[in-house]
Image 1: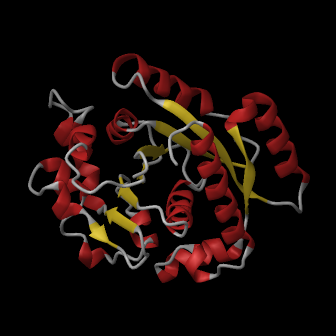
Image 2: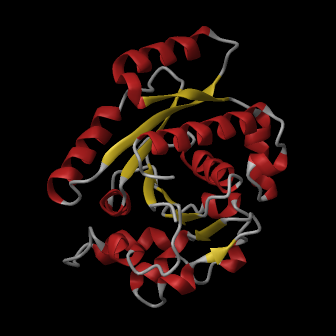
Length: 262
């Protein structure tokens, strides 16, 4: 069986495509026969919605799990997407940072919970909230690596240094094995020069950390969540779907190169 990879999808800036990347990359990897668990660690619960989990199905969610009222096996929901399970989130999760603040294991709670999963997954993706608070720190402490979606806009690199500082803080005190999986450029618009300029600047700044695949700004990608579907199931032939399939291919190639999967 392939080795399990735990990947936190994070960027403290909102609206950069974290959830879209989590949902569609998970779906693309599942289409290759991999088993995937998505942990929705954002109180907005958009990853849960994007995977077709109705809000009425979220009584047993990440908040209940972290609070200790249910087991991790009770929290895992099988989605209609073959090979993709999810631990959903609801707005209740917004209270968890306050509740954990006084706990001695507050930074390691998610890591401990993941270690109790009986089923082996090829990939576990943690969709982080758009902040560098306790939920994100928990995700980075539990993860093997961090995947950073970066929007092709003028302020793309702004705040990235803050995220890198948080990664170093986690490495130093909580999770020495944490690596940067890579940076994926999102919302690329080939009709204007700005996207090309940002892409060039980011690649010059971050080098090989940036994936070759770029995710285009695509209306079908934006429409898909309203139907509770990843874009790959909503319109497999659109540019957005093709990009996420290509990104999944890059990720698999990267893992094979590093000897982490067969």
